[in-house]
Amino acid sequence: MSKGVSASRPGPRHVAFIMDGNGRWAEQRGRPRLLGHRAGARRVREIVESCPELGVEYVTIFAFSTENWKRTQAEVSGLMTLFRRYIESEAQTLLKQGTRVRFIGDRLRLDKKLRGLMDMIEALTAHNVRCHLTIALNYGGRDEVARATKRLARDVADGKLDPDAITDETLPRYLDTHVLPDPDLVIRTSGEARISNFLLWQSAYAEYEFVDTLWPDFTRAKFEEVLDRYGSRDRRFGGVKA
Ligand code: IPE
Ligand code: IPE
Ligand code: MG
Image (cartoon, rainbow, N blue to C red):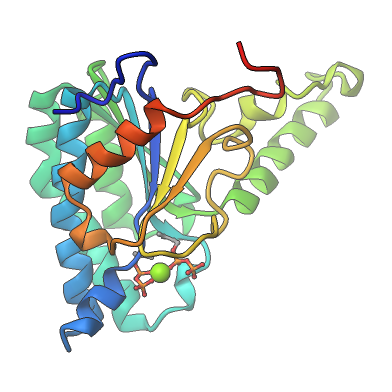
């Protein structure tokens, strides 16, 4: 059985998921979309819990994009309730598992109660080091770069940053992900082959896997298959094969 590490190459240190297909999963069953999101949340638990055992140190999940506000008010508020329940029900499990939880995205548009729970689980798990779970909530790659640029520009205006000293290592220090390594592998479920504004800067050299499975059907076994395929990929980063 796979342990996320092939015989020859190490497994990915950081896996990021675009968890897509909850709505279609429910529609295929003639059920409301929210039911698909609930099934998706159960799968999040399974996949997140498997990460430390599979040797994945960092796992990032795209839970809600800056564009997802375009959905009906009923779906948006149902998702927000689900996020609150997930945090409440998983906090102790994640603490015991040694998983540190962080959030990326713009928190300002989220309601106060949810923000309070986000702060709570971040503080509760702040000393954990076994695994790092990052939840992208009201996250958009372009929005993140815009917010980062605003802070960077402020530092220039305040005389704390010399424009001539800016390199490609400067902006990432202002991104929400500044404490995280770049993703090695980005997995999108549901058969769509697009990135939908996810980790635009950070994924410059990520490997991508687009799988047809809808997120609520994406089991640990399917995850292990993807990890096995990653092991046979040849990452060159612009260089030549070693
Ligand atoms: C992904 O599933 C979850 C969120 C975007 C919150 P979708 O809700 O996008 O499911 P589909 O793409 O409509 O099937
Ligand atoms: C991306 O899925 C966002 C999340 C998984 C949270 P979407 O379903 O929103 O993306 P599009 O609209 O198909 O590009
Ligand atoms: Mg979708």
